[in-house]
Length: 219
Length: 210
Image (cartoon, rainbow over all chains, first blue to last red; front, side):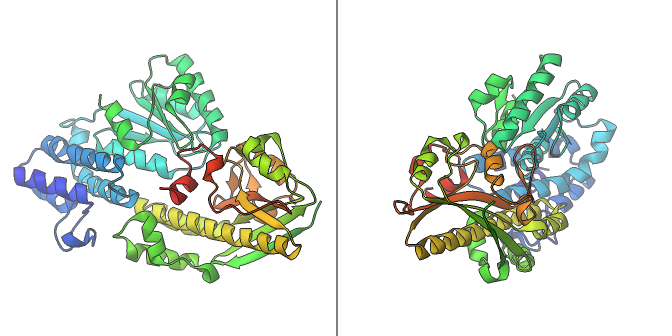
């Protein structure tokens, strides 16, 4: 059992999706997270063990390495893809309730802003840490955030802004939502932001990188 | 309205080498980069320059940049874009996080390459008049507020090179750069210019210092 857990973990850490994937070159021709997860389940490894013993810790390691600038973005994306290929096998277990997500995370880029690369990266890292992610996309208005929060009252909300001009739009959205949901956990991210800004507008956290967001969610 | 001179720059004449892109993305994805880069070579970047016969200083430029432009006799205002060509490529890869990211990185790098070419063209023009020229400065950097984009665009024809401003001053198509270059007897190009700004997370600081 440990063998599968370790192998799946390594595949996710190294971004090995499946047998056909040529990346990483030193694992060419070997089974990836996709095949190994399928095999593990067939051989009696519990879905929850795969999730909590392999996938979540592996993405945690990737997040730490990225935070320490030891990985480039494409390497993180490959890890997220490998994790997603394993997650496909776990979907029926989520549906049946045999395994549970840690919670729901709603994310979107604020109104007036069309940047999505950073937001997508954060989404994938958070999903990899065991959360269900609702991605509202880009140019998201306050009302859309509110609607998603209303439908998922226990969710955590994340907002992204990449422009100094759309920081104003973020402030408007956070203040609006905070008025209606004073206890909602809100985290914000994006290059022009800082902790002082996050605190001033009423957000709980400024996440300078995906791992800080993951650590906050799991705390 | 001062004359707006348009230029077309085929990316095939300004092509990036795979290794230049790998420096930004890290190794391991050379085949993907090669394939995407090939698609960019069909794009013609568009640029346009207007020279106004005075210094440009607006409150949004901030004190640091204003100090440079106050000494200028002329100001060259420019825009450039990869246009819809980039958006078509990005759309092709939107469903694949890796390829979409690589496309974004390559597009940003080509936008910078064309900005260097435009900066050089302005320098040549200044030099032909016996004048010096500065580095290029853009709204959103070096203390020039992004909202200053509107003042800059007010000197240009409507929708220059097909570029429109959104309410949040974002340029569409997204891989576009606007900016200004100071021209004058006492204007000099600075090899290193990050000293005028304290923005620690600026992408140019990363590029030129780290």
